[in-house]
Length: 199
Image (tube, rainbow, N blue to C red):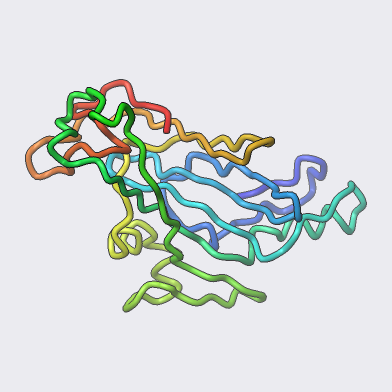
């Protein structure tokens, strides 16, 4: 939900296009060409990292027209979920957090599209077998289906305004590596992760 802090009479706006999950806010990054990206973590054990890329550009300034346009900027665009991979052999990620022979838990990532939202509330599911309404409401289920990486409670995203690199604070996950649960991986290298990490 977004509010306009400069207008106490304004009506809060619910941004369904960002998906329903345990949002830990939505941190905004604006690219050089005015594209708006909202990063959100699903603050739950074994849940996901998301980004929403608006199909609208930010309108500079504080004119009533610019403010009105920018209040709708998160209505239309594409919602993605992160899938992380690494070439580190599984045998070198033992859940202790000890560095692998390469010296770091380096890897790569892909943003998998889940939902494309358009004007007037129109939406298109990008996940086979799930309606756009289901993706918007049961976003975790859609992320499960596309094989997103299960994280250790992603809480806060911060994008470096100079480099564009994005940093994520992962809070903890005391269930990592437990029986029947996801094991440690390059992005989440410690079992029984009490203290979290920065990715």
